[in-house]
Length: 298
Image (cartoon, rainbow, N blue to C red; front, side):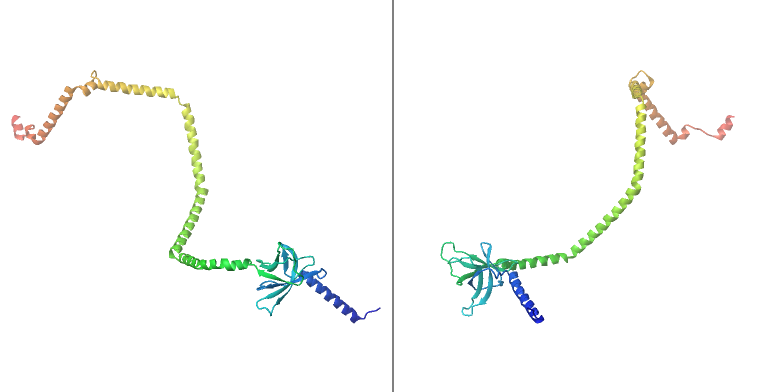
């Protein structure tokens, strides 16, 4: 049996649409070949909840959101159609809780009533509730505190602006800049000194060290015992001379220690001084000079 060209194109299009349909559902997490049970859940708010959103029990995925419908007969109620695994049974009194993640969007969590053994019939309606998510907690708890902090932050920023714009800060920065420039200049001068003066200083130091070594060698060659003996002899001579000065058995001792001689010398010095003074005051008393008398005597 031969197919026309148009039939082949049509068959390829149908197969492509079939693959596209199953592929899209597979990407959404819908398994068309897996049997499921459908339930309805009523919510007051389904913010951020999307079709194909996962449904969990105790952290284990048991189904997905199939559809989201608005209940026009019951105001402020939104009906969510969920698909659960065929073998999944929901006990009476259980409820579905919507939670919102920080980045993953909203998901549904079934909170099972573990105290009863009866189950909800397939296709029945389950009560739903919304749990505050991370963003809700931030909006409800953190934002008021942030709003209370805003005036303080504003005053802090105003204070910082006044400090930054204060002339004293500008002057301080200028001083710091000049200090840095001076330090850089001093560092350059120190570098120049280290490269030019320090070698000369080290050369002089080596020379002085060499001289000290030579002096030390000469000191080792000196006979210290002989030097000490000579020094002791000199000190003994000085002591003997001092003792002679203090005794009266020699001329120098008599001159220094004889009181009568000292008094006579003192009196003689005073008489000589008086005589010189009188001579200056009355020179005619001691010198006679006359031409006529001299001729008559001849």
